[in-house]
Image (cartoon, rainbow, N blue to C red; front, side):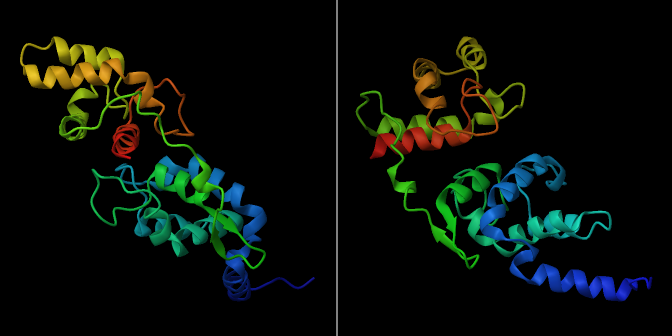
Amino acid sequence: MSQISPKTESQSQTAWLKSQDGIDIKNSLTDIKNFAYATYDQLDQDGDGFISLAELHSSFSEPLRPWREKSFLLFLMRRLDDIEAAYDEEWAGPAKGISRVDLQEYFEQIEIGDDGAAQPNPNIWKNPMAASGGINVSETFKDIHDFALKTFDSLDQDGDGFLTRVELNYAVANDLTGWREKSFLIFLIRNLENIQKAFKEEWVPDDRGISRMDLQEYFRSLRT
């Protein structure tokens, strides 16, 4: 039996990848999403919470990477602009890369047709907005929102990306915390359960604490 030369094999792989990303996208969408979630920390080589195009290229170029995984990476590379635009992280710079929440929102917002083209998901607008808890919208909410995002890293003492009741209480008890800031913290503590439900992070438990996405979506719901 004749062996396939490395050059022929390489050409075959290239042709395969160019054809619908090498996969049946419609039937593989869940697999792509699960792959992106499962390998996120590995793909995010600099650990900044965003997967850049350069990082995707680096992973794609790994010689031991299976072809099917390469096709998933190719899907992400070809759609990077659309994916990173799926959710506007107010605290991150423009074109930072793909975050976990970008992935979650992108895959919720699209449907794939039989031709492999992405289309808006008609059911996305049926999702209810987070309840405001009967709070009246005022300029103070913007101040609380800005304060929470600005001080998030200092409040998040264990650096896990979530503000717990213990961490917020600790900040309130700090003698160096001003009275206005303490009032903001008390607001967050009293509304912690509603805030942490404002955005559903699929990769963490519901009661993990308040994330930046929770803050953004909660205060956005108060403005509507």
